[in-house]
Amino acid sequence: MRVCNDRRASRRRAEPTIAAMSNDLRDGLRDDLRAALAGVRAFVLDADGVLLYRGEPIPGSTVALQTLRARAIPYRVVTNFSLTHRTTLAAQFSKATGLPAEPELIITAASAAAEYTRRHHPGGRLLVLASPDAAREWAGQHLVSPEDADAGSTPVDAVVIGDAGEALSFANLDVAFRQLRGGAAFIAMHRNPWWVTPKGPTLDSGALVMGLEAALGRRAVICGKPSPVVFREAVAELRADVARAGGARLLTSDVAMVGDDPRADVAAARRVGLRGFLVLTGKVDRAAAGASGVRADGVAETLAEIVAGLPPR
Image (tube, rainbow, N blue to C red; front, side):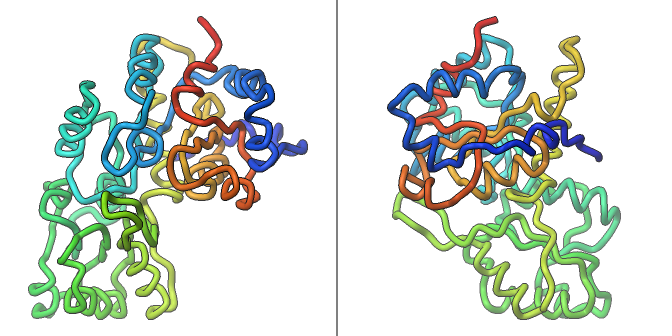
């Protein structure tokens, strides 16, 4: 799938850094935000830090989604959370927000990885370290257990590492390591070293992915953020939504990514050609945003402020 970088030429000019934007939030950034949002026709939204924080809805996020729906502005929720199948995650989100949440509007690191193996390893033997619920994303594909992979004489074609809880044991990772050493493709849902749960900062499976990469001397194919894989999938789905509604072809530069991570969300989306907007309701405050040195199309306190800045139709 090819994605055009419609904004590449326009980005050659100097742009303000997140630090400059954050410092100006109190002093008229709303006008700059409205200008940056001109022409936006669809959104890619991070979940944690944009819609939810520690499992609870962020104030204003529910109204923001209602506004997007009322204005028929398509969106996808893209998250590296990969412990559950999209249907489970949609039900949890609907319960938390009171909004209907269709599974097809959600792209997880697990669903993106399953789509990747479906395309690149059709019929292949796959060792997938994921939770039982998330493993349902691989329905119809040939999964083998760590025990079968270790005992069998036939090597697996690909190893997928994701959020698997206690299944990410030393024994299972050791099996994965030997299969990878034997030539299996190395696929990971994401490379997040940590995330925020109700307990606070919590170790994430990306830390183990990076450990395997160090042991193997090669990098994994990452399917979740900040990989282009997941952003391109989101743009393709949004483009199909717009086409079904009879709209003009959606350009990549018509899509805005809203995230709370300067690098994994904003910078990664902009590399693919999307616009990148940072909100300060998750991982970073003003100081951390400024220290990142990342350039963004806009910075706002919340998703609600970004949606309020959309030009009227």
